[in-house]
Picture 1 (cartoon, helix red, strand yellow):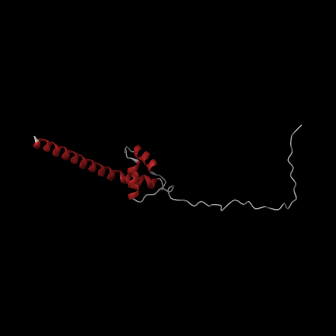
Picture 2: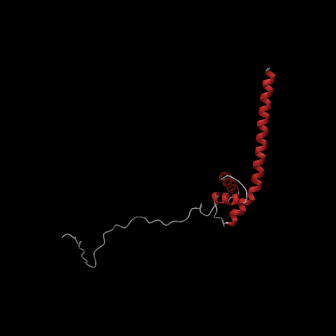
Picture 3: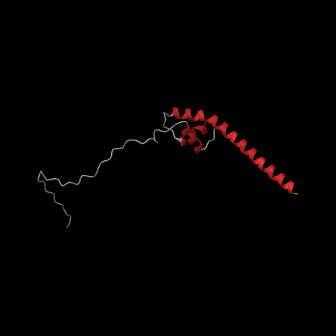
Length: 115
């Protein structure tokens, strides 16, 4: 009785280990198949596409790949979108609130339209 349950435990752990190995082999083969496509799509977009647009392009080609996996492959290959790179934006130090002299001596009056 004890040996029977021990055998069942060993068999189930063996099957789960076998399933994990098969899944990792599938993931590796998919990665090897999709990586060149991701690089090709990225270069064709002149380094503009990110994970979302690459995912759409891969779907058009018949590949279903998650954005996270695409992101990992892009990171491993050093692919960074132009829109991700920080761009220079000039900043004004502060608003000019200095008092300016009235050189023209121009007088303004507020008209009220009361009857």
